[in-house]
Image 1 (cartoon, rainbow, N blue to C red):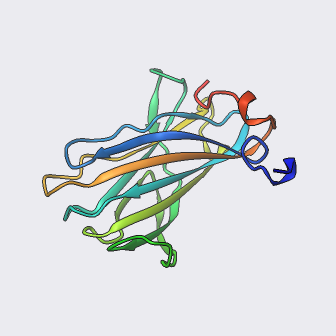
Image 2 (cartoon, one colour):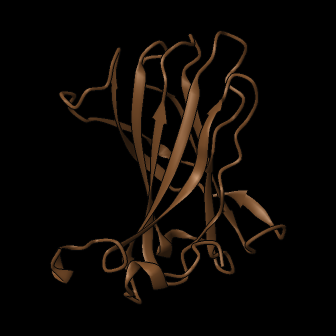
Image 3 (cartoon, rainbow, N blue to C red):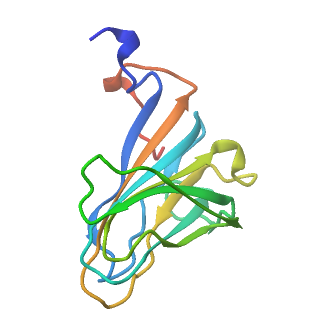
Length: 170
C-alpha cells in the first residue's frame, strides 16, 4: 500500500474506549484519550438491540492519564447516529441536536442497533485538561444492551508509521 493511502499514523490513531459491555448491567467508564498531539477525537459508539432502554452517553475531561481531576465537558451540541433493527450499511445518518452539554440522552430507538458519532476538538477542552473520555451511564434494568466505543484520534500533529505511534493515554 502506498504511504499516502495509509491513514493510520498519518491522519488518525485509534484506541478502544470500551470493549463490548452490557450497559444495562452497570455503567461503562470509557478509557481516556490524550489530545495533546492531535486536533481532536471522534468517538464511535456501537450499541446492540435487545433492551428497551435508550442509549445515553456522557463526555468527561481529565487533567491526568489516571486519577487527577475529572469534570463534565459541556460542549456537545450535535451527534450523528444510525439506528435500525439490523445495521447493515444501508442506513443514513440522522443529526441529533441540543444546547451545549456533556450528556447525549435518548439518542436513537431503544430496541434497535445503533451507531453513534460524537466529535471533540482539542481546543474545546478547559485549561489544564488534556484527556477526554466518553462514558455510558447505567441504562436501567430492561434486557441487555451491549455497547462498544472506539476512540479515533485525528489531525495528528506528529505523523509516524503505525508501529511507532505513541500510546493514546500518555
